[in-house]
Image (spheres, rainbow, N blue to C red):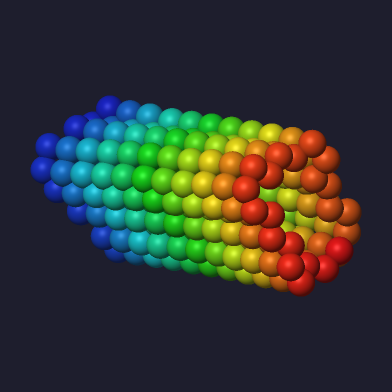
Amino acid sequence: ANFQDATFTNNANFQDATFTNNANFRVATFNRYANFQDATFTNNANFQDATFNRDANFQDATFTNNANFRVATFNRYADFWGATFTNNANFWGATFNRDANFQDATFTNDADFGGATFANNANFRGATFANNANFRGATFANNADFGGATFTNNANFRGATFNRDAHFRGATFNRYADFRGATFANDAYFRGATFNRYADFRGATFANDAYFRGATFNRDAHFRGATFTNNANFRGATF
């Protein structure tokens, strides 16, 4: 299905649609509601450079092969609640100008949000990252919620910027948790988080309160050169 460069002036309804072959929406423009709820993409789904000017609904969508949203622009609500990405999910350089919802989403292979911009709330609560999760250099202008998320492989937040609250309460990091040089401009919540391997916060900046109360560090925990401008709470933490 080739919709490259297509413009949808009114609503685009692909709810429950099944794309057996490649689905190409590269550089497509959706001027009204784009509905892909419960859609199934059996082969590659290409939304690179696509623009969503109204709400984009991919709730419970299934991407069996590669899902490419590289440098896509979401100008309204982007809803991927419960979506399943079986292969690579590429959101590198994507821009989310309103809320981005990936709650309970499952990423079986690599999830790449490197350099992405979240201008409003970013919700990854309860998400499962079974392979590498890349948020290197991402900007979270509003609240970022990764509470209860599971990172089975490497979690890369190196150089990420959190301008509002960053929530990682109860999150599980099973491999390398890389927060080197990350900036937490507001409160950082890692209460009850579990780091099963290397937890690397070298050079990170905590401009407000840093909560690691009850966190568990089962291997090396590195905070060398980190800056804690306000309260640093490690009460009940296990190293």
